[in-house]
Image 1 (tube, rainbow, N blue to C red):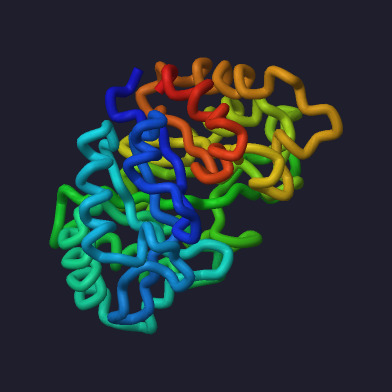
Image 2 (cartoon, rainbow, N blue to C red):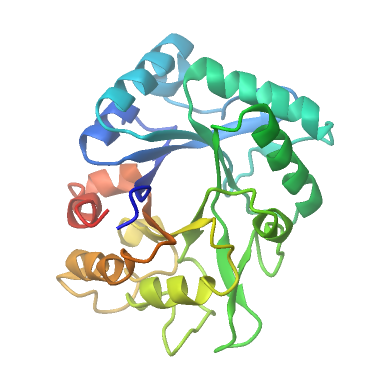
Length: 285
């Protein structure tokens, strides 16, 4: 097992579950969904609950979550409503402001969950600038999955066929990739689609061909049927033992040196089903 493997969960800022509560359930990497990068304006996205809207409360919660077992507490920008708008700032200027914000609040890194047709060269240079300023900060990304034709190798996209992440991936900018193995009915690898539970292990093996060995691979799944439009939970007959089956898939790959753990969208939706996802998977991680 990779000692750096993480049990990753995205924590929705518009709910009332705290970082500390997530850590107590066994999440070792908690990703705030979402922070905002709007030029020099860096902070928590509009509409956050009281748990995340008070700076003092948020800083205290992050500190306490670390004491409860959270190895990483990450600030994520992007998402379906896109909170990543660098506005063409020089990457060094944006990186400096971002690093200062993360350090002040106690975040251990930044996650780019980009779902736009954006500038991959700018993203690569921004990640490089962040690492130069703060080498210990984690940099992660949450790409989606696509492919040219069924059966061909999978590749990572920000949206559609936009391979916005490629330059940064190839230049080893990301410590982890939290790959969204859901919401796209098209990809088919070795006879499995995102609606098949064995897509977890099969996609992991396929991505090892293209992702640098220094980058850890985390295959992500939704917590339940409400969490994604297309997934292992949206088939007509979801197996009663779906969570143990998910755990089995991670167990099939956890010994690989590039295994980075498991990811779920989201902690809040996992809570709706009494944390069945994290309970089933965390011991493997």
